[in-house]
Amino acid sequence: MAKNNVIIKNGVRFEVAKYLKKVAPKCTKVVIITDNNVFMLYEADISASLKNAGINVCTFVMEAGEQHKNIQTYEAMINFVADAKLTREDVIIALGGGVVGDLAGFVAATYMRGIKVIQMPTTLLACIDSSIGGKTGFDLPQGKNLIGAFHQPSAILIDLETLKTLPKEEFQNGLGEGIKYAFLIGNEMIELLKEGLEDGNLLDFVTRCVDYKLDIVNKDEKESGLRKLLNLGHTLGHAIEKESNYTIPHGLAVTKGTLCVANASVNYGKLQKQAYLDAIEICKKYDLDYTISYDIKSLIKNIQMDKKMHADGDISFVDIEDLGKCVIRTVSIKELEEYLTK
Ligand code: NAD
Ligand code: GLY
Image (cartoon, rainbow, N blue to C red):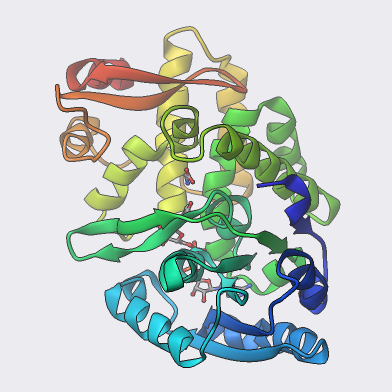
């Protein structure tokens, strides 16, 4: 998607109608999909902007939480959209974190074989990651994100003011993915995080993450190669999440996974030790627990169940060659274990 369809601006939630008209000039009706927490905080701002511009608005409110990212919520949403009689000219607005964004995006992908969606992320994780790139879907009892589709948003409206109400642990969770971006993008991101994400720095940080991800997605939308770089820290991260019985949140698990790979890279004389130490300092600054209390060997066993396993038993993971230089490597499970435990 074009960079000029991503607006990162304080107060953009009061101007939604203006951006909606740009991407969907014939739209007369909008369904806002949100969760009960975000509804109380921001839905009125968005619906007022739309109603003032003569747009008809209906709002679907889901219960907040990953446990509701399921087929029942999807069914309720799509029935709601059908009852609201949205046409192919109309638009769904996803207002919330990644759970709302993924579900609402999938409703937009599947209703009438696809209508427009505008993503309005309100968590740090959604601002820098999940609202960008068009991955949509929901979980099955058999696993996370097993139902889904690629469906690019027509616009992404990021209002950083909304992050002010985010609970500390949710901000930390987003920052977990932020540390991943620091290794992918390079030293300027490490410096920003070391300085602190107050005011202008937060805007700078989010903008760099968004630009980086957009650039990758525009080159490899369906994740046939380059996009896999965004999975830095995820191979181990998923195993840590699972081993903790999902008590360790995803973003934090990604930080732990990223730092484990960074440590291995230092041990193999690739990444400069200072970059690793800087990342540790950042974790301490933001109170992120970067330690791994599980045996790497048992995590590797867990990884064997990971969907990134190839049929021949090899596995792809993202390695850090240097700060700002990551590569996708395919190795055997034994090689991965040796690499991470040297
Ligand atoms: P979330 O959507 O569950 O939001 C976390 C909590 O924060 C919720 O309780 C929500 O109500 C609350 N909240 C949201 N915005 C708020 C605000 N501004 N103020 C106060 N509270 C607010 O979690 P998340 O971390 O945003 O997203 C996680 C989901 O994202 C997972 O389902 C994951 O699979 C998905 N994801 C998708 C992609 C993708 O590319 N599509 C990428 C990464 C993650
Ligand atoms: N979160 C990884 C991706 O969107 O590809």
